[in-house]
Amino acid sequence: MLEETPLLDAPIAGMSLTHELGARPWQSPPQYKTVDEAVEYYMERMATDDFMEQLEGVMEMGIPLTTLANIIQQSSVMEGKHSLDVGMLVMPLLIEMMMLIGDNAEIEYDSGLEDLPDTKTKDTLIASVRKDMQGKIEEVKEEPVEEEETKSGLMARRK
Amino acid sequence: MPRVNPARELYFNMDIENLEQPKQKEEATGLLAPRKSPTQQPASMVNEPAFRVGQHMSIIRKKREALNA
Image (cartoon, rainbow over all chains, first blue to last red; front, side, top):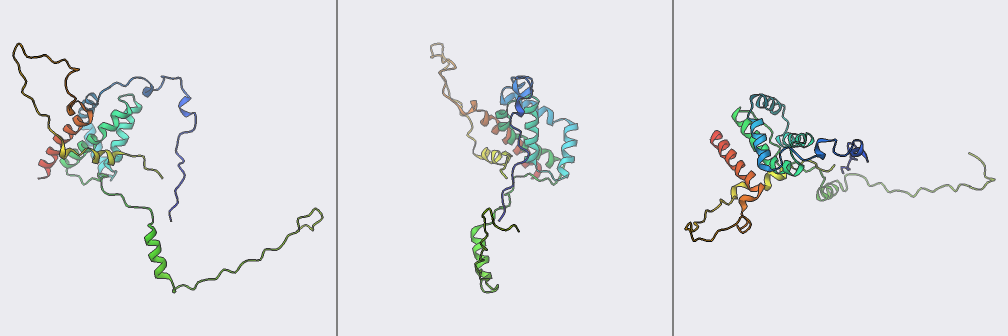
């Protein structure tokens, strides 16, 4: 069975306190406060030729659009363009817009919207494999290992 | 490892196929008609930001469908 790997890229405790309060862009009021303002900002930005060319290149590399949308909105939050909740609301629109750009350029892109493969091994599968293998593999009877009694007294011999 | 990208779920939660289009009520426009202040107006879906994003999405999707048709 797959084991969960530890999350190693998490922020270090106190990492957010390495600058003065308000020094970071996301600690001050965002540039675009409403969803409408943010939508307008993204539509203008995504309609430029530079953006479209870059996006088409990234799409051809096979990077899922869901990942791109998340990166775009997160970087805007970090730049102080809009708040995180506005970013969450706008994200589906970013995916739809990128799909339109991809369709327009006739690129076969990975939308990232397909069902994700289930990486967890199902218990029923394990049970069926165990049933199939029963009898094929000699069952090894585990003999109890006799533990040697070690003398732990102060005067015991050293090994 | 926990999933950190909510984009897929957010996209499917939009449900833009079933967006309710705002209905325009015929209101009395006479001089003696009661005035309504903005606070008295009923809460409409149009005021919801997610609804407006959905409307934008449906426009873009229609364009996509026209492209792919």
